[in-house]
Length: 418
Ligand code: GLV
Ligand code: MN
Ligand code: MN
Image (cartoon, rainbow, N blue to C red; front, side, top):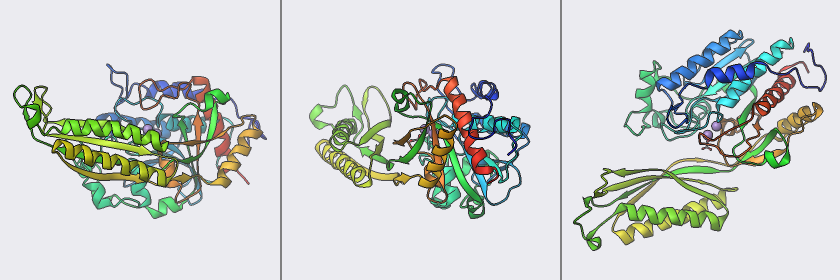
């Protein structure tokens, strides 16, 4: 590479990050909560896709959507050996602005930095935004990367429904895509030599270490389970307590048991989504649908935790005369990122005076899905409070800009001359 900042020194400061951030920031943000509602295949999602396409084309990149709705912006020819970077633009309900978006904005700003330094990639560089990473609309996280790599059956994916009963196939059709085409794309995956995803830290490990940027070691195994408690709807003012079959009580007992199981096993178990049907404030509900999110450092602990929650749900349901059904919606195995790539990145950053600690995480990422198929790594940018999946999620501008420099150094190393 011909560069204004040769050797191990970081390239020049990235002037474009703040401008890009300001431009993307209003899209899909709820004016009341300040949180983001960028759900796949909605108008907010379409705005984000159009924004990414515009920004990529402004930089001379060529955007090719794949059949699964992931967007790929190529710098250089679409040839094998490409180095990929990016993340996602969808959000959880009332999510923070950084989760996913930081990796996409940083990738664009890193391209600016490299172009300013007169770098031209010897291997193609490709920026990607994955679809439905959060699974906030259709329930299955990392749907875009799972379809791409063939770890989810396209028939099952087409039939996934959102809370309004709209299928993925219908949503994609409304957005102008052909759902019949979704599925694995081995040529695209095999054409990638590495994937590096930069992400806001979801946790607070970097702050006490005094580091702006970290490197991922791996991802805890995790999954989602849907629990349906079905009882008997009745009048809140007349049904005797002894006569009730109240699914809310079975659910409440299960929530408390999940917390106990997580504490006993050193795991995490969360009920963050619940729907009471039909939802009248003066009625015993007929059904409660609830989603368990469970995560642990290893597979055995995760299984034991979920088994304990399930047993508690069965016991609580029997006590209330309620029927229970439990269905696993997703399970993601433990991920260990490629050690060679991780060490190489650590070396590049250390040589540039940006030593980056190595951290595990309990959060899921498209990088975790791709890690099963190609050398993959992640960079984390410090989150001073650690709060994520919340409008309070934050990273300081200076740290985001350090993330841009770190990513540019890594891409220059991976895509530049050997
Ligand atoms: C994604 O952010 C997840 O870990 O659920
Ligand atoms: Mn997330
Ligand atoms: Mn994310």
